[in-house]
Image (tube, rainbow, N blue to C red; front, side, top):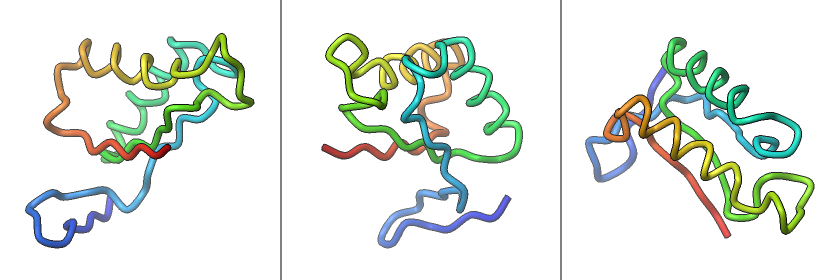
Length: 88
């Protein structure tokens, strides 16, 4: 895996980012965890999310992607090794 350092920090970020916009609607929590496990095994430490995910937008699933990421981080106990990107 190739990495870059975020400017003015010592944070090392993988050049590949794992997108999560379908988790909670098109993908289950278990599938999201499996995808994050695979990405981590490949050296990916950069995960993208947004408060409106999962897509397509639905009030019943809004925020589910972030919840799935949260349960995975709690299970792995590796928050200090992951870089999360979010947007509004």
